Amino acid sequence: MTYLNKSVIVIDNSDLLYTGEDIDGTVVRGTEASLILLSEQFVKMGISVDYCNSTQKKSQVNGVNYFNKNKIIKNKQYDLAIVISDANEFRRVSSVKKAVFSNSNQPIEKFIRKKQLFPFLKYKPTLITLCDYQYKKRSFFTSFYGKKTIPITVDPKFLNIDIDQNFLPEKKVVYNIRSNRNLDRLIKIWCDKIFPFNEDFKLYITPNLIDYKDFHKKNNIFLRTIGSRSEMIDEMKNYRALTYLGHKSDIFTLTAEEAIKMCLPVITFGIGSLKERVTHNETGFIAKNDQEFADYTIKLLNDDDFYLDLKSKMKNKRKENNWEFIAHKWASFVLNE
Image 1: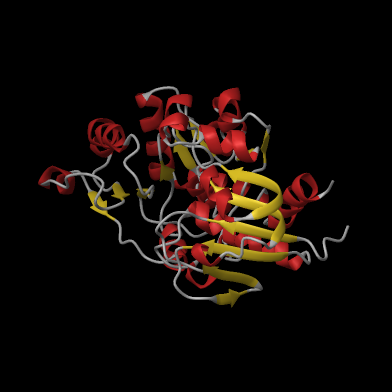
Image 2: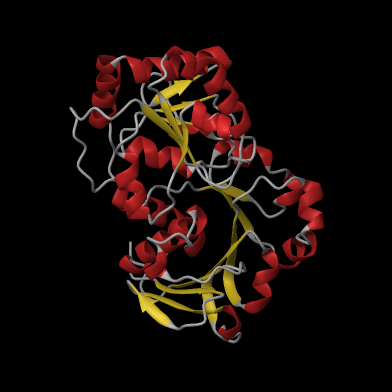
């Protein structure tokens, strides 16, 4: 199927300054990276893509045209307009079809508080959710004109690395989420149940999320260094697991998907969307309580053969990146009549 002469515009109303050149930096987060990668895949399919945000420079990166959202030509009609969360942005553009890329669960009271009700009624967009958990959470009143789940996937960089099946990292795990989501409870489980088992165990966490007091150092809790996407990949190779309980606000948990693609098991409670990311006993472990969470973590850290066996299974099931499939789902759903 050809999509020649089709056109898409992506609008990000945030204050972030970025283009596709910045995808490897620290400014671009999961949502922005996903839409950059989706846009680049559209271009490969023959679709013209304009990507508009707060950038002050006009450029073309991998075929995608980037410019400031205030420079959108209103009398130019696109086949599809995609906005990130805020339906008010449709006022800037003329398009045949409209879609809201939703990166939150947004209950009805927040939907109204964020002034989304009127623009949804006016512009009649389709709501795009990223997983079944989010789809079920978004009520009818926040998706009047339909909703559809189209997932995202990882940056190809996470699949282009070679996995050394026999490499045995130090006895350390990581929490690399950018926000404080049940981190206090993770630290309590670590201090009460995991670290006392073996004082060689180490936990690395994202800086600036908690008040880093001296007792953390006494329990082998260290701060990670925040770097580029490529630097994070190099960092992640040296851990045995991602330890993240999960949170009700998680609507895809791209961090977990990235870890799994790197053959890094995820230990979790399966809160939010994590039940969809993690397959128990195959790509990690879904614990029922604090003790189970501690036991799974200790097993991966303390039993080298157990860790290497799970890593081998994950490597054998490692799937190819699938942005082409995802872009075709978008194109067939929204661009075709």
